Amino acid sequence: MHPQLDRNRFDPCEKLMDALEECHRQEFMKKALGMCNFEKEELTKCLHYTRVNDANDRIRQSKEKQKKFEQRRKESEEELYGKNNYLKRMIEKEAESRGKQ
Image (cartoon, rainbow, N blue to C red; front, side, top):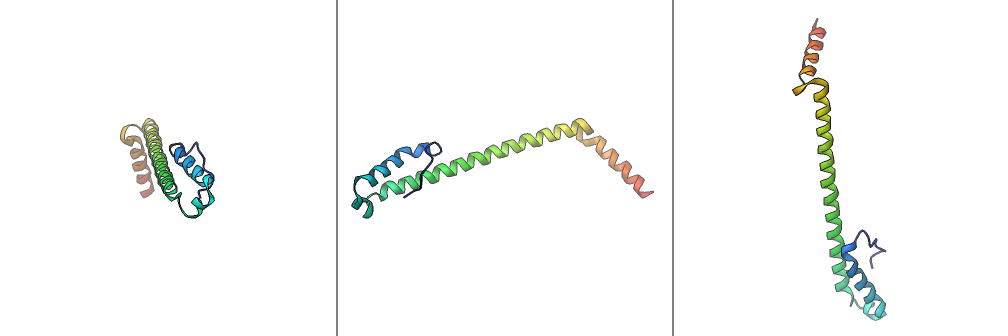
């Protein structure tokens, strides 16, 4: 038997959860002899599919967030050092030439 499930998180599987619970409530022998296995297997598949989809959504959102962060960082750096970091390269060259002397 599955542990208590969050019906909000696994909303697409709610009917399968109800079907399994109803099967288990009907008779003890049905439960003991595995007569509810079909409902259990279908629920397991549904829960797995839902978890995988949720994980993929979180990964996609994280990648989008990271892209936005990287874009803001580049824009900030461009504001500070000019297009293509021209000023930064000039500062590094100057520092390098002073270090050689």
